[in-house]
Length: 219
Image (cartoon, rainbow, N blue to C red; front, side, top):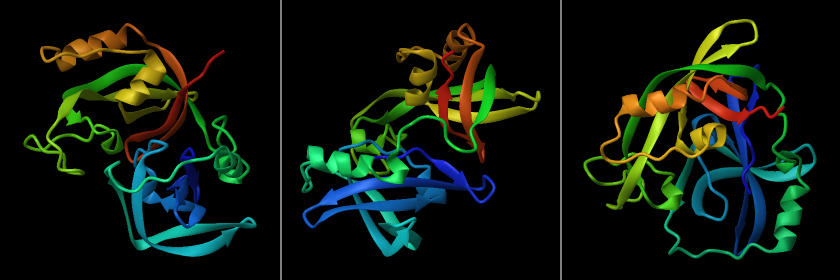
C-alpha cells in the first residue's frame, strides 16, 4: 500500500509511507525527502536496505536513514501474495487512512502551461516511465519503451501568487483526462491541447519545483 506524500517541518520535508509484505510478514516503512517523492505503484516489487526500527504514534515501523537504498526490482523476483487481511491491516494504520484532504494542502488554479516535453520512457510498470538514456532505462536496463510526457504547470494561489510545478502523464490524466501523443506530436501540440482545458481548480503542494499530490477539486 502507498500513502500520499505529506509535508513536515513547516512544509520542507516530504514524507511517504509504504506498506510492505515479504516472506517474514508485513511492515510499514517511512520514506523522507527525495525518496518520498519517488512514484510508487501498489503490488510492484521494491528492495529497501539500510533501515532501522522505530515506534511512532504507537505503531511499529521501519525508518530510512542517510544510507538507505530504495530501488525497484523486476517482477521476476519473489513476490508475496497480498491477502484481504493484509489490506485491512494497512488500512487500519494512521498513514493509510484515505486520500482526502491532507494537512497543509494548498488550493491552486492551473492558469497556464509553461512548458512540456515528450519523450520515450521505460514500459516496465515498476520504472514508472523513467526517461530512457541512449535507448536504455537507467533503472532496470530495459530497452523497450513507450511515449510519455511531462508538463510544467503555472499555478496561481488564492492570494494571486504564481508558482510553477512539474507533473507527469499520470498526473495530467487525473487532472485533465486522457491525452494521447504520437511520434509526430510536438510539445507545442501538447501544450495547445492542455490550454483548451484550463482553468482547472486543484489542491496539493509545490516543493522544489515539483507538484506533490496534485488533485482536481470536484465541486
